Length: 601
Image 1: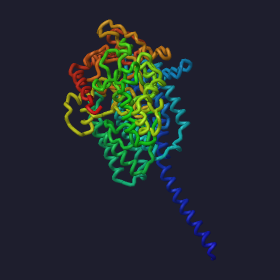
Image 2: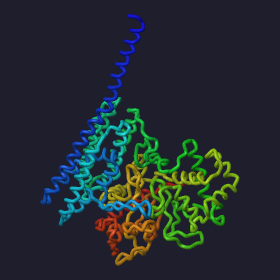
Image 3: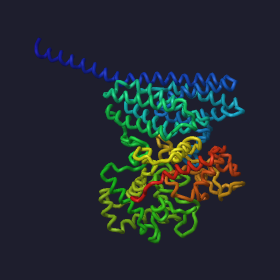
Image 4: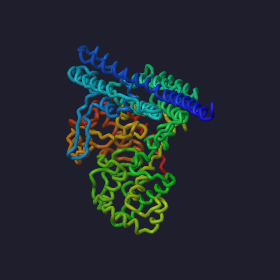
């Protein structure tokens, strides 16, 4: 056999081996997703079959049994559904409230809820509404059948799976154990179902682990989580211990798994890829919340420093005596301490100045959430005739008038002063105001053990019985919904115009309604952060309450409804929370542990 034929044979053999290897690798990647998809489709079928059974029943206990069965199947698919079909997931698991989408005056979509929570709120009451329950069960059954017919996991890869895994760990630790999607308070037993599902998910990917010990660590950790969840009631469950001992441990294992699998994970997720707990200055990737990002990471510190200088420079505002810091004073935790802020002529404005701490970790700005990003918020403040009161072009010229800024912009951006760079610098500075160094943060990270039993109990009440965390989501405790952090919620609370407790009158400020005239948005305001709340009195958009005791009392009686205000669109549940005096005291004690050390700000 001559050399030519030997060469051809060798190439053929090498190609065969290579193809076999590639096929083996393809199978290694494809097999777990094939198994996961089969598991997913099986539980999708379980969802709609249980709902179909529910829809023909009349006995309440039989309906409850089928409802819980449908939820059991749903919780098995939740981790994957929330990732591969986020829009359907939001429809199915959303609150019993209209879904409102406002793009402009001519494009406002209001969708009445048809979901699990509607069924739950009509089922677990004395007089059930069979018609509403059946109508929603049929809708959900059809939706699950549609999802099944249009399901494909072919586009998923190991990075996708790891995002599914972490998203669900964070979702369970922030909203799941708090009852966000279960008004009837089944969230602890449903979290147990979730962890059993995650354990099964992970088993499909066992062969992806180079370190078998890491896989075993996951199994051990899931077993410990299940042990702590098993048999617990909603009110008795220790959420503080669960997050500290399990959610954070799982985040550590996740970081190790990304490395073990050599997985490619996006650098612009809301949570940093190396975040090992929820309550750290390194937890959030603040650049994912900023519209325009600077690719040169070495310049972030210089840009932030420049932004701080602009923020505090009162030579740039109207009459050369106004700066951002005039209304957001660092010593007052970036508020002004007034019930309602003053304009540049000293006249009272409609609302107060919210804290800028953690302001960047949201998707809506101003109390009415009328602006979607930090740069837009900065632009509006500069142009507003009652605030800075100057055109952005004039602001730019004033910056250029100071020679030191020319050099600072050159150092930060390698470019001259521009409107774009001014807004980016200010956005980067506000985006840096996320300390996460409070007493509570240090304790739940395990750095110290100084929380009292009352403070821990207060956190558990916040996350449980008081339902605070169904609107103020940990760890930021604002209205931006974990784990995707894409939506910041607005609520209608029925805030009074004065601190009356009987026959109160609603505050005349219509909030979000002013921008699109959507009836359902009357008196709607963004959910602010509870962090540093001890230092940011007075409270509510109009400063009506001076103490935290008043705020807790307001929520405890059912918001505006409980003090005589009857708003048809109140989104806050109107029932009393039935908090005891001790529970209210513990709740306030916990909120005070969220006070940051701000000496470096």
